[in-house]
Length: 164
Image (cartoon, rainbow, N blue to C red; front, side, top):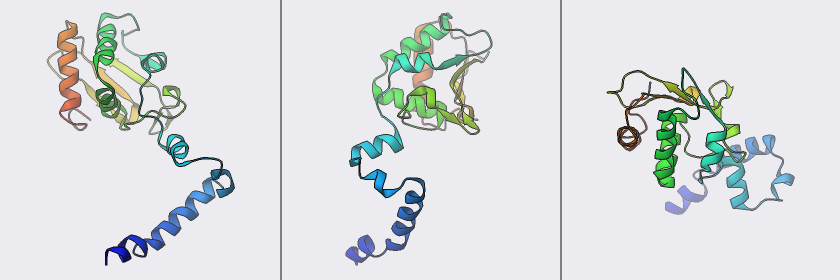
């Protein structure tokens, strides 16, 4: 029974998947790649390059790269381990990997869309996100410690907490 489920039970579905994939990427081109290279090309990378992330981030409503809250934000990101960074990325964008071309290739619901940090006035709230737009609404927390703990709480409570 197990053998049938693994081998023949999904044959039709696998054949349709192969057919659809071959329409997008000819099999002759796939032969140049091994499995890990194909995974990288289709799923992106799980390693976050913070400098690339900063370089391809947009700021709104008074925030800019040297604003104290933005400096706190990037300091927190640098303090996070890679797993926490990936959770932050998923919290804001809905995806848990970086496109293989880097942050410049992030996409929103309507095509290319940069990671965006927007001002949100309620300092008592956790950051909130708009995953279709790769946007985090970040309150002007008064200190690094407050921002760090609010951001960590938001991403640790799950990727649905605070999402609109």
